[in-house]
Image (cartoon, rainbow, N blue to C red; front, top):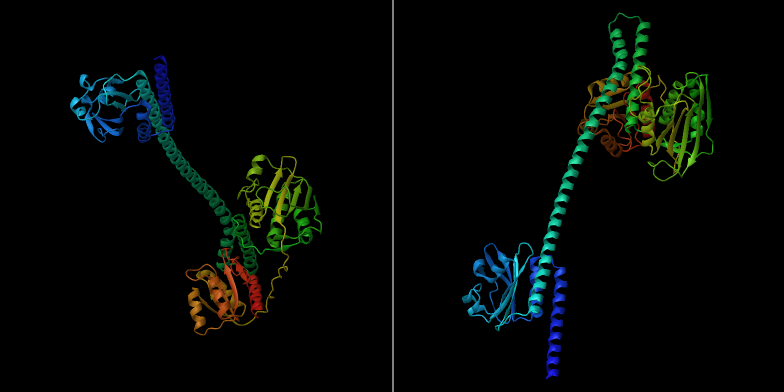
Amino acid sequence: MDKKLASERDSEQKALAARWSIAAEAMEALAGARSLDAVTNVLRAFARRAVGADGIAIVLRDEDQCHYIAEDSMEPLWAGQRFPSENCVSGWAMEHRQTAVIADIFDDPRVPVEAYRTTFVRSMLMVPIGRIDPIAAVGAYWSEFGQPTDNEIALLEALARAASTALENGRLFASLETLNDQLDQRVRERTKELEQSQDSLRQVQKLDMLGQLTGHVAHDFNNLLMPIVGGLDLILSGKRTAEAIERHAAIAMQAAESAQTLVQRLLTFARRQSLAVQSVDLSVLLAGMQALLGSTLGPRINLSIDVPATLPAVHADAHQLEIAILNLAVNSRDAMPDGGAFIISGEVRRMRLPKVLAPGQYVCLTIADTGTGMTSAVRAAATEPFFTTKSSGHGTGLGLSMVHGLAGQLGGTLEIDSAIGAGTRIRLWLPVEQVMGPKAKAPVRDEGGKAHPGKVLLVDDNDLVRSSTREMLTDMGYEVVDTDRAENALRMIEAGERPDILITDHIMPGMTGVELALRMRVDHPRIALLIISGYEGIDLIAPDIPRLSKPFRHKHLQACIAAARAQAA
């Protein structure tokens, strides 16, 4: 008898261990559940076997009703149905936040007997899910009357606690995801606000700089226009001698050329200057400038040029580079009123380049002086347009900004090293010429008085410019036919007009001057072509077509016509 009891106990222990093992597996699955559906699926898969019941049901609180959302049972129970909470055992368990243990469903006032009478259920357990505010319950049902055991109660309550934790974790994760979404949205909104603020600030800064630039340009141009307007007014008065007229005209021309230089510096600063880029030998260029630099610096400043002939050629515009070096020499001269030294040196560098430069080989041309030097504030603002430390009327403040713009346009950069009492060192970085091509030919100059007779078709939409150019051409001896549109010129040529040279503005309404010139090159290659423009934006389009920048003088137009006719010959 003792052996039989021992065997029964052993079987019960093994069965109980198996149930706790199933419960442990269920709780492990619940640990990863993040939604009510996931919790329901785990309970439906494990709860009945863990408790050893004949059926289980999962009930969801739906306002004042209990919704039986799922079940695992020997016979159908109430899956999908709803009952009033006050007439439902699950409603009682959720409301009282405690387990309902019912040994006999027909002898417990909490049980709606009529709902159970047609089912197999005779005893049951109902455990709420949710520690603080239960939102669901899990019920276990048996087909026999009897008090559920402590182990059965413990197993189902353990599963309910695990389900409660899973649901709370799910709510927490959902809250975190919602918070993250809200934070992401706030970050996006804030980022957008900051970008809009930065855009607004940049616009304000641009407008401020534009205002300063406009003011400086207006000031300098008005100063240059004054001798032009005043001189022409005196000439037109008819009360001046020939000598006075010549003097006033010379002053006006000098002011006009200064205005042209100012525009070129502005374009160079803005990197809009048309560059005649070629292979430039710095040692040859500087040797040719030595006399000019010496006279510019004066006798009290010692000039030293140490640029070896072995230095590789650079990719640059020789004329603009000369102007840049001359600008730097003028700045150095003004910084050494009591004399000093001006030194130009050069070396090839591939390593330790300024960060703004692309990898490659560069010539570092260093222009140094022993002058007064710059404060850190002056050094920081030195390349800004119109910034100058000179008194009014003694400089436009475009020298360094022009050199800086030129260096950038050539693919290099400019560095300034200076301190008060220690002089100034300007490093001009220029890219080494990669492919050595033929050096640019000197422009063919047409000597004054040797005009080539012939016919010119002149195209310019500006009446004053067209009139002025026509007068120059007539003075050279040309027959001039003019129009204000490229389309008109094209129709004239198609109708039989055959000029010796077509001179056209570039920027015009409709067809541009370059488009017209390219059309002529294909259809009428014997017609010489010359493009004139007030905007330096055509250098990348048909660069081999001769072109002339406005404003230009009689001799410049004459030389460019000769070059154009030589090319078409």
